[in-house]
Amino acid sequence: MRPPALLRAAVSGVRDLEAFALPQRCPGCGQPAEPERLLCGSCCEHVPVLSFALCARCLVRGREPVGCGRHPQAQVWPALVYDERAALLVHALKYGGRPGLADALAERLARALPAALAADLVTAVPLHPARRRERGYNQAWELAVGLAGRLGVPALEDVLVRVRHTPAQAQLDPERRRRNLAGAFQVREPQRYRERKVLIVDDVLTTGATLEACLGTLAGAGARTVGAVLAWAQ
Ligand SMILES: [Zn+2]
Ligand SMILES: [Zn+2]
Image 1 (cartoon, rainbow, N blue to C red):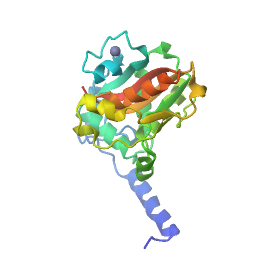
Image 2 (image 1 turned 30 degrees about the horizontal axis):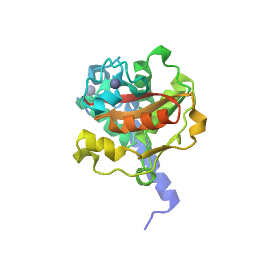
Image 3 (image 1 turned 180 degrees about the vertical axis):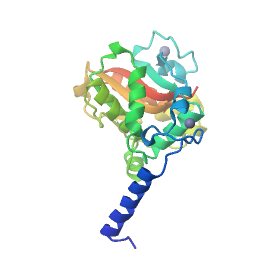
Image 4 (image 1 turned 120 degrees about the vertical axis):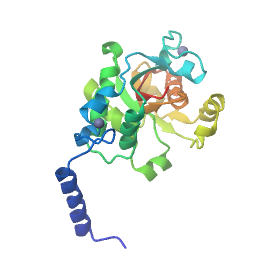
């Protein structure tokens, strides 16, 4: 049986008070930390920062992803190296229990982007609608909103839709993973994005297959595309 609304509100009020009253500990080292940053200042500083673009297309095909000039529509800017501390950040972001964390991480993402990027709008790699309902939260979209605010451009959630659920990606080799994702995304209103520069955000870049599929789908609709990810898992 569900507890009555008043009781639920009281319980959540107590939780808020606890979060306020108890000292926040950094999961990286146990030292006190600001809740909205998750990690303490020292752990934050130790996550290696990146400041160059990768090519998602070359990454997916197992070629050198740094310094490619041939696939400008597949350029992706990572902010951090996906080390143990970055993994703690991404995990906390994914499960959404930290108000303010997405915004603090969006600030780090904004710092990784070149000043001349000139995006017209920001969007995120979408979750499949069923997955989104189950989770209630798309961490990439939370980052996209914070980033768009900093860039002073709109964030639009439904630029891309995931029309096919693509389970069990992790077990596939990169080439099968790429084929598995072909046609998984569609542009909802393609005519709206022609010649517009669209920045697509994701949390972690691993094989690059998902982000490459999103960039390629949108570029196919005539948009100029660029990607940004919080962390690169090399
Ligand atoms: Zn720490
Ligand atoms: Zn390339």
